[in-house]
Length: 75
Image (cartoon, rainbow, N blue to C red; front, side, top):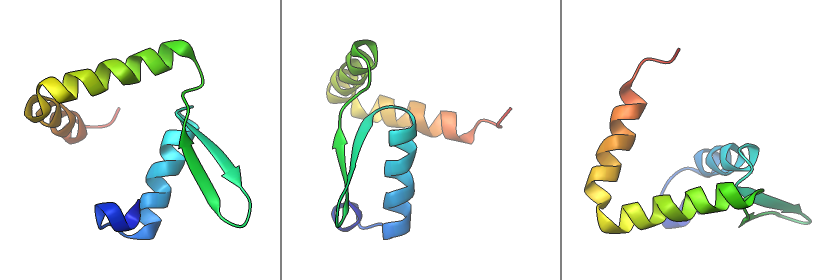
């Protein structure tokens, strides 16, 4: 993931761990840590697929919404 997105490995690992804590990824630890997309509930899987469809229809708008959310003060 780090190489594909051209980001530091630590950033990629932190992002994957964040998604795993939110029950979106399955983690398999052997010689390496492997992540696999596997939402923990059907509702969560449905939400992810809805998001992907919205992104495909209007990626610019979704990116604007994400950016706006990231700029909001944390409570």
